[in-house]
Length: 229
Image (cartoon, rainbow, N blue to C red; front, side):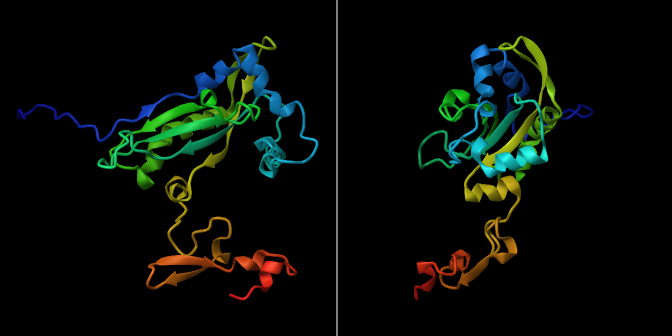
C-alpha cells in the first residue's frame, strides 16, 4: 500500500436483491392476472372448510383488525430455507433464497412456480444464522412502503388505484424459525405457541429436551387420556 493512498474496503458479502413493488404492480397490468388476484373476495366458501388461506381464522381476524374496502390489496407469504447449490455432500456451501407467495391467487395457481416472487438470494458459503435480519432489511423497508400503499393500474377495469400489501405469514421449518423470528427453539421453552406453559424435561443421557404433557389438552373423557404408560 502506498503511503497517503486511500485504502479500498473489501466487501464482506454481496446480497442479490430484486425489488418487489414493480413486479406486484405489473401483475395488475395483465387483465387475466388482475382478475385472478381479486378471486379471494368474489365468492365465499359455503361449507366452512379451509381450502385456501382466505378461509382461515387468521385471514378473517386480519380483516377485522385492518379492515379495507380495496379487495385488490396484496397479501404475501414469505418462505426461505437454505440448500446446497452444488448438490454434493462433500461441500458445505449454503445459499438462502427468500421467496414471496401471493395469496390473492386462487388455490390452483397461488403455489405454482410461476406465481413465486424471488425477492433476494442470501449468498453463502455459510448459513446467515441470526444475522439474517441484516440481509432482510431491504425487504422489510420495501414492505413498509407497500403497507402504506403505492399507485398501480388495473387493466381489467382501466383505472388506477392505491395498492397496499401486507406480509400475512411465513413458511419455514422449526430450526429456521429460530433465525427468522428470534424465538429460541433449542431451550425448554421452545414451543412458540405455549411459551411458559410448555412442559419439558432434560434427558441426561440423550442430552436434549423432551417435551411432555400433551394429554392435558385432550377433552376429559377422551380415550387417550386414560392410557397408562
